[in-house]
Image (cartoon, rainbow, N blue to C red; front, side):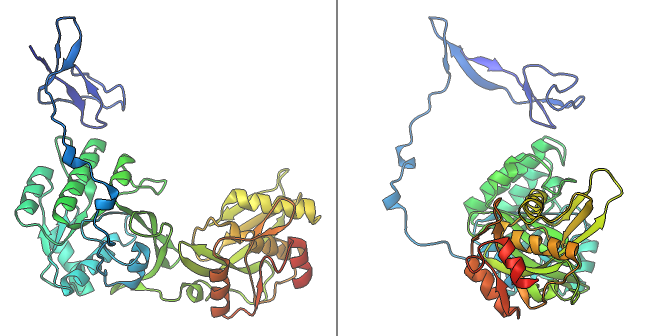
Length: 439
């Protein structure tokens, strides 16, 4: 006959055991094991082997030929915010599940309330699950942002009860702020609760075509807290970051659009305001005629930007000179410094070198190599690069300049930003030739 198996599961990490343990051997939590419902696992045959107790019938209807899948792309609807639509790839998709992460106070709840208002203006029913703030706090912010009073607030954080409420009357748009406040058989905020809640909400959204945005806490490393599986389950992962006076919305995963696309906002008392021309905003405080300052043409997703690369060189008091980079890939900076020293004979052995991408953005783009090389050479030699120059290109180990992705888009952005001299491959074949032309 069938053998009944009793299992115990850790409420913190999901580790399973045949008996309750005082301490979980996987995550180290104490008194975290809870008994699970008994399940029929297997039966022993006459020969002593085991076989599955329940026979599962095959479902041949689950197999579909690709040619039988209906043609046509997904139907999108606008968020009402152009910068957000750009990051999403054109707008929201019915049934899409999005995960929004960011540091506390960066503006996640603010931008989602603005999106909720735009959805209400389009005649959609919006439910906002407020797990971290009271209805009074949300109303104060909503009144400041001008959000419609038709927004529906849900205070239930028990997952099963919340899903039962939503199943009775599914909304068009759902905001869960935050997924770490939802409770299952495990306490709120635990890895198991976050994982199970995300999976259950994803199933609900797909079954009822509800567009759902989950707010997630981030760790000190800046990634969404909880098991990595929640990022695999959702359709789109967005991060809201601080960049100086601006807020940058960046897509890290997007099944319905480009990855790496960014939207730029500025936080005002009235909420998040879009920055239509980020290049002009980031270059607004650029010093004129200063050595070590070069404009670089970079690409983030499908968007080209003109950003300022700054470099400073100072005599070091230490045996080993310092190499400090902010907003850039430190390994790419080291490569460019090695090329300057080896191929161009620039003496950097007794100098501390600081390289910064002004404005607070973080961009890891090989196309910034040329601007880094020009900025460092300008800082060491004390000769400014002309203010009408913008540069783009990857620097090879032999000192050659290599083409980069989206060169035409970058050059168009440079001309639109008002730069008359664009230094780029293949017009210049080497870093040395570019420096001879400019200095």
